[in-house]
Amino acid sequence: MTGAEIAGLLAILSASVNGIKTLVPIIRDALSNSEEISQEELDSLRKQYDSLRTQAGGEFTGPQWELSGR
Amino acid sequence: MKKLNSLAALFLMISIISVPIFTTGCGHTPVLPTSDPNYRGDAILYQAERTTVNAYKLMDAFATWELNFRSVLPVEVSRAADVMRKNGRNWINTAIAARDAYAASPGDPGKKDALNTALNVIDVALSQAAIYMADNKKLAPNNGLTPQ
Image 1: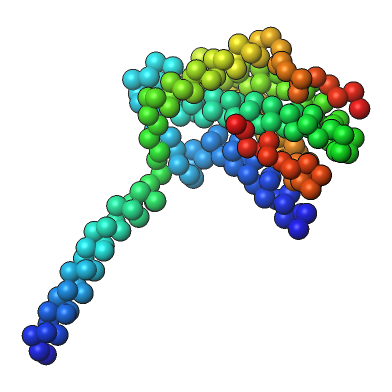
Image 2: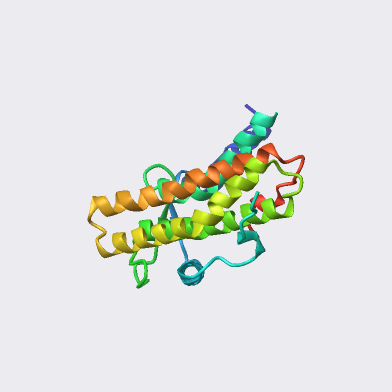
């Protein structure tokens, strides 16, 4: 095996290792069974939920909520 | 093709509504900050609220779509929309009450079941709405399927 061939193999090996290093976190994330919810998301949902709770305590308003009468 | 559209719409609607509440065992389970006083790290509370909020948005979208295209839609679609208009608020309030009951006794399996049942009722109604929207896509473009 020539020096150039060895250098070529080393380059391939190095690329493979780097490729694996890149792929591992991606695969790990894909397989992960959890999704972290930020405090901002919680606050936003809570705001929408409270608004809906208030709205549902009265009537849903707007022409789209009026019966069609068909 | 019509059947395919129906299935696609049904899948979309069910994904939006059901996935959050039913994925605790097999999909992405939300991890909440335990410091939040409202949810106290309980993903079921979070999912129930998210499902309820999304359900309202979809009901509103369906009702708006039916109103906008009433003149060209079959009567049965308007009737289905009216069922939602008559009962939607009650369905939402039932889900809210079931969520509150679960929050008060998270260890009680009956409360958790009641919460799932309340959300299932909404799910069934919205699934039917999705089918109507898909079946009548040519008469009435269902841009309203995705809530704004």
